[in-house]
Length: 394
Image (cartoon, rainbow, N blue to C red; front, side, top):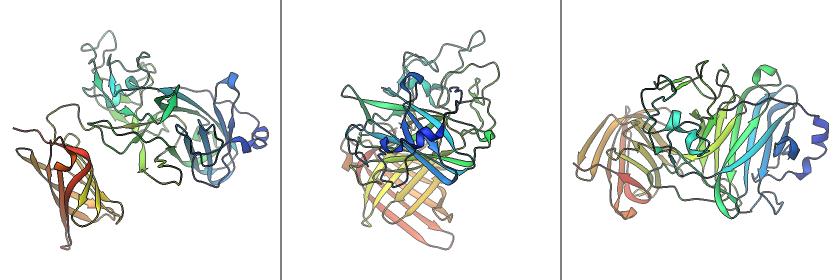
């Protein structure tokens, strides 16, 4: 978590220079962002106009100066505020980092591992055990598995992840009210690391750990892994919560240009990363796409560790979310049953049968079916076209 001091600057000067900002998003709105004063630090300064759904877009690494930007490594962050009462500015800085999904020391905020160790306290597996002196129960867990940051940017020709550090007024300032929606778009598509879910997520590091108005809910994971932080805890730059509201793998016209969106109340630190099910090797989990025998492609995600099951057919709009209430194992096959709801809120009972562990993707299999209270039935079954299914053998 981090802390910023908000400094107001003259909006008039900014509005006179809007033409230099080139968003990667395929939007026609006024971007509202210009390069900041390098000596003061921010890479972009963005001005929100008064009104409903006021938006700004800051674009980075676009040497071609095209709109939308087609350049490899280009990326953008867009903010939309429900209601702006008084025009105001935000400051956006970017830091390029590399990660491997492991915090070697296991210590939250370890500066020697500036991205992986920002996930340890709230997303690490094994869980952080509070080694804060002098009452810590033991040493931190070395090589802690954490979310894997998405390396869609470039630095010196090498892929890097991006942390967006955003400072601005709080809702208590009276400048704005309602939600702050974030969207991050990029051009470089990177294959999902094995063992991580393929839909990248947006993570938030609040700018004030004791702030009552935050993008993150109250959290208590034990061992002082709590949010808001206790008054005697110092800042350790931790990403606290997953604020993702959607992921669209191909929304725009330039390249593949994926976009991930989130919603909160304040301006903070943001990063895109892949989440995982469990660091253990004895879980039932899967993530990917299957080519259904009903002619549609299914997008699935399930994890016994979190007890969650998700399935969606993007072309039909059919989707469900449910709980994994029972799992029966037989060799490399798992039968999963539970309850859930469809996209329109209709309750269902479902059964899924998965076949996993095959080294060839097409040899793994996913099938799911459900029935509603009114007797409506759905079923699809097919081989994986990407992703994985893991089933522990007994």
